[in-house]
Image 1 (cartoon, helix red, strand yellow):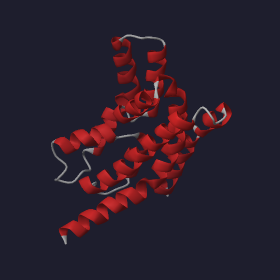
Image 2 (image 1 turned 180 degrees about the vertical axis):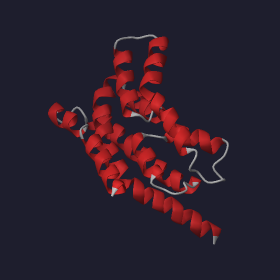
Image 3 (image 1 turned 120 degrees about the vertical axis):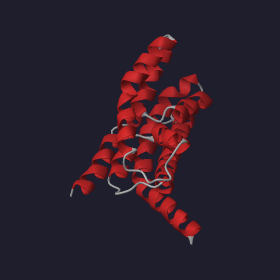
Length: 179
């Protein structure tokens, strides 16, 4: 009984996260195509360690300009501070099992889109959030990998146009919830 409920919540989170994953696929493809000059492994590693598109694109500029660690820290803190506030807000809606390391993971995986979908929930469970975050992150990682591997054969204008999909996806997630 318990395992069935857990799997149901993970699947529900993954199902709700599919639009996010698809939107991330196109945006991260653009990131991968741009970041490939550092190498495929490095591009994927940046995507794995920093799940925010603004933070990733900002870091590329600093790396390309041979910026200092202090510059990187200040820019990343400035660009990503809103995620700390989102995490604090969302932590008020999580269930009683969402403690310790799980709250740290919530903070790591929070993005605008994941926050928006999670806030639509009355009570966010660990299993729902895991499903939502895992499918979204998989979409981001797949897009980055494909962009790094195939970006050189896709025309730049198409790669750049794909980054607009993130904004359209965010609007598509928010509007139905507002009704």
